[in-house]
Length: 132
Image 1 (cartoon, one colour):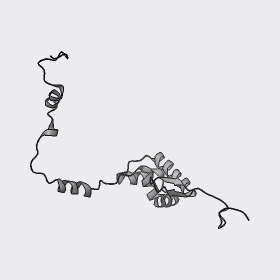
Image 2 (tube, helix red, strand yellow; image 1 turned 60 degrees about the vertical axis):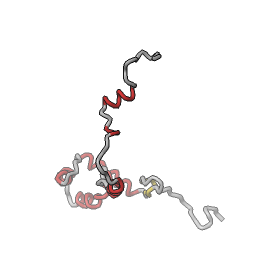
Image 3 (cartoon, one colour; image 1 turned 180 degrees about the vertical axis):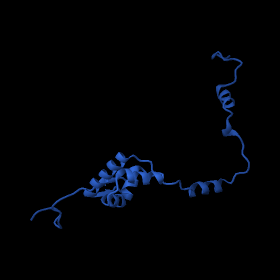
Image 4 (cartoon, helix red, strand yellow; image 1 turned 135 degrees about the horizontal axis):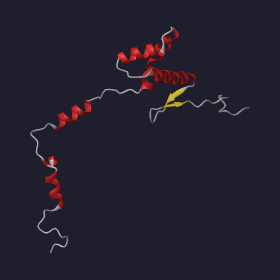
């Protein structure tokens, strides 16, 4: 005896499978799984850079051009022509950040790969910091 009040109806799993077409159970032709796996493992998506990464990489050239008299607007025009969409104020801000970073020693965190400030310790010596 069905107490759920759905007598005469198909079980919900069957109903949902047929409603969505359940392509997960559809048989495919001969597929070389190993070739697919190799292809996926060999695939390297193109590197996507953040604006600050681009500015860090180009900073020496950008700074040299600024020192030669180029305006932020002129630099932005060149960058935009080469598919880096950036506003003049953003470039100015990002260059300021990089300039500040260069004054502080940064290292790459070995576990996560992010850039972190290097701990500056004074008085390091061979005695392990103990003054004798």
